[in-house]
Amino acid sequence: MAKTPLWCGYLEAGDRSSAVLQDERLETGNPNTIYLYNLSRDEILQYNRELVEPKLRELRGNEAALAEELKNAYTKARRSFKFNPDRVLAAPARKQTRSPNERKSQGDEESFPSLETEVDGVGAEDWVDEEDE
Image (cartoon, rainbow, N blue to C red; front, side):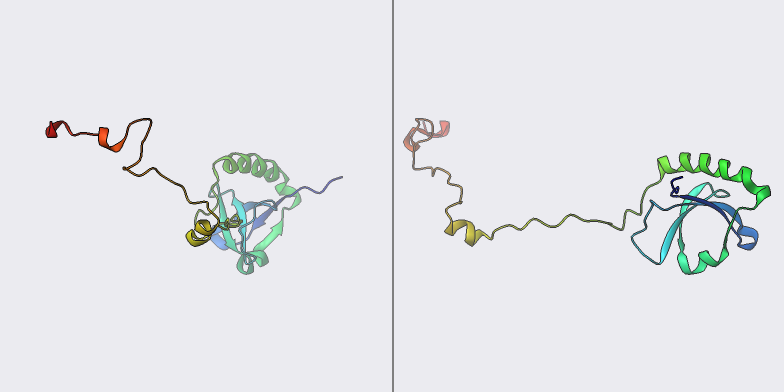
């Protein structure tokens, strides 16, 4: 049987205790933190791993019904979950560009016709302001 990436358990934290679900596929980008779905708060929260792990425990036999409730609620919360927008987990490598001097030396500089040359068969002398006439 394949191991599931979902772990259902209970966070024992006094009056803030709650059934929780951990999805191993959700990474915070920081090895010191983890995401847990908190059933009482009905949202996925980021926790300090050092503080929360000692307070986590497996669900007991009489709490087995919580596992199904956790999975269903987590599925709904996951649809609207947004990763921390302040942290980019895997930024693409920046494309290296050539400096203007390198482009000039390689002849890549764009050329634009000057006003003195013809453009589409009309020479600079053919351009006349209406006020000049």
